[in-house]
Length: 170
Image (tube, rainbow, N blue to C red; front, side, top):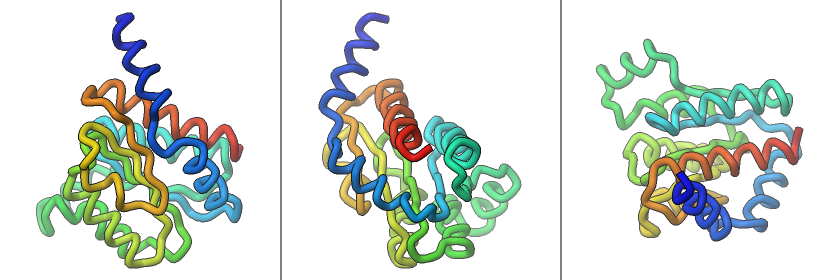
């Protein structure tokens, strides 16, 4: 257990994005835009958690595309890579903010959603980890990268980053 805490502390202390990135995100949130949160697996749970908290504690209009029926419908009929991009096509508007969360930064459903959001002039904030060369890491207006190969460390760091942002705007 001690090693896990050490790894988490180390990852947070060298989190790439840093204070400049926090400031940029806070600037994006000043006008109270609509917020979209996406992720797969554990990142989906983080997305859902943060959509609820930003709505309840921050007063933002939030969306998290994790409804089981919609996920399976889109996945079955259009392919899983479209599971987040289709709702963004339907609901995203210029200046909305998309928080794209992926531990690996390589998920095709997240990559496609980020490209879709950027094409709609949405502001994209990415949270990734694992390899420094992951695709998602450079796709956002603001990018947070956790230099760790551990799911636990990356996911807890992503949660800490998002809670830190919320604490500043709530």
